[in-house]
Length: 628
Image 1 (cartoon, one colour):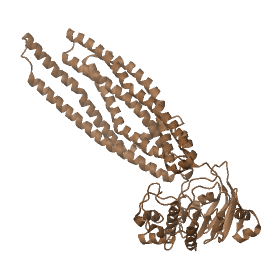
Image 2 (cartoon, helix red, strand yellow; image 1 turned 90 degrees about the horizontal axis):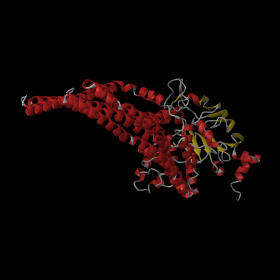
Image 3 (cartoon, helix red, strand yellow; image 1 turned 90 degrees about the vertical axis):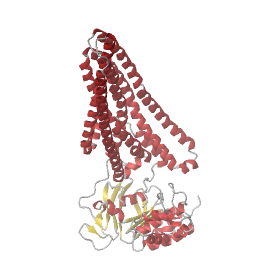
Image 4 (cartoon, one colour; image 1 turned 45 degrees about the horizontal axis):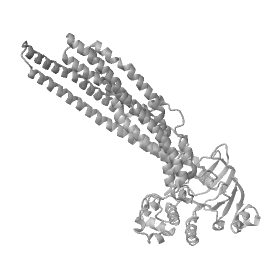
């Protein structure tokens, strides 16, 4: 099956889609609180694992916090022993006591490391599961979005959300969340230990906090806008590169290299500017905090020395307190750095959730009809389709304010060959998109065998149709598998039989590896005409009730077209067929020709009947043979 997203008379996507969609992304103000609530709700199923992680993270931090205090006791024993040896008032250094303290300290650090390992192991699992779920939900969302979304959004923009934004969230969840918990726990625990040693020195140490928070708030305020802009322009760069790479031949053919490079440099310069500023502001956080820390460290050392001289506290307590002072600013610094990361992650999360919250296709009917393709129908909702089609006073516009099909009605019996002709932009391809329910009509109805297509499940509805478009779509796999895309359960023999009917077998035999030849990503290792033949073989294999041929032979030479036309005539026997063609000589044998202009049927009838009317169709037909 082929897909075609363009609209008649609309801008070419390769030329403008990336710029418009890219520039629109991320322009709205970010709702960080709303995004955070959405993220917590999304993580709901992992709450038990997260609670366990937080429990082990707190325990690990507590055990590591009491280490300096215990080490201080060993220092005190050592100092007292040395002083006793000098004064002759003691028994010397108590090595057994020091050894016991150090062994106890080693045990505490081992337990702390074990708890840290457990919480890291569990959190990594949660992070990977959440990442997997996000990508799965985005992938499923892609299939539920209406085609109108793809008309206004570039592939690169969507890919950026699946890759860059989800990766950013994964890294944040895996590293930053537990780091915030441990940092807060460490901050509270260290504060308690410091107060237990000396409340006077603690007040001096706390004096650095207002200065620290001032710098944190200042830097965060400046960097917040830059991180948001960085995510936005990263999406722009990805979208532009993907678009230019996909349309590389067209860009080269029209000498668009210079404009493409200029556009890329514009996006890249903006990305560079935003990334440089965000990373610079993030980078200066550590030097600023280190400077403030050193000021507090000096003040504590001076006061501690005075207290030790006065005999207020022991040398071991001073040593422990100095360690706590050094550690006290670490969680503050970590929280400051994590704040920058969380801003970037919040911007990424909002882009992901914006995508997941995009309006989806109109829900299917509760008691939807299903199509029976073999055997007798087993219920009233399971029907056998004959293939008659009715268009009842259709009114439609891609933009509701700009209606392009104003009042379209037609009754097509099952098994008929219907040709739809008209000038470019008349609405020919739009009619087919409405029939396939790629878009829903604003007014009127499209019916299959008298049933409104909105009463069918979309999957069942589209199984009725076989479609061959002017824009071929093949994927990177073997020719055999590309044809089998029409019916996944088809055997190799059935695939080859369909290939023979579509004149594919003739040229496949000349290719290296035959049907097992791998098509590259752009499928340009075979010709455009050969690609078209393969898509026709795919439609033949699908064995549909209704055929849709939109300029299906426009990319093949005249001789091949004659052979394909013969195969298609055999295929169309007993099936309702819609043929859109600009070369009117190819649809002369159609049962009914619908002539469209400005979204309305202005003439209908057989080729001979329309020629005898000497109207619009005759002028259109004769214009093919007139010299330019």
